[in-house]
Image (cartoon, rainbow, N blue to C red):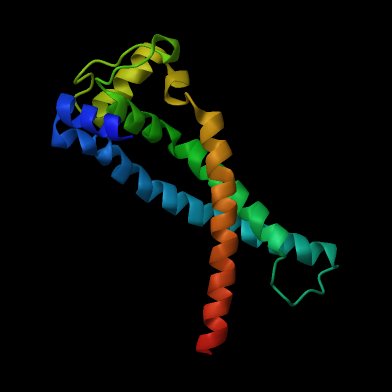
Length: 166
């Protein structure tokens, strides 16, 4: 890790440590919005499902931990699937100009892209839509359980805070 840090400073300067920051900042807003929005939708569907299964007699709107986990899992998957192209752009900026082992792909030239928009267009033109979704499976494998754990923790923390504040 130290050698990578030194390599980045040497080859790209201090600014190289912030490569990919703009796409990260642009990605995080829609990602968080989609994740919370879809989580809320999945939660409402789960509550409706519980009401349907009980014959419409359920006044309690609580969900089991497993149901919260599944809602968070689905929310993380949806948000990542939609925002993944911005993640690809971010990663391209981060690896720009770094030495790579031939086994893991070609070297990305210095200043390969002018900006995010240019990167999106050039990836689309050169690699097609598949280029914007490279690495989607490992990203979802990471994002889905992260969303699940995040929202279960969110619900339990929210309930705990509500219980001590009321």
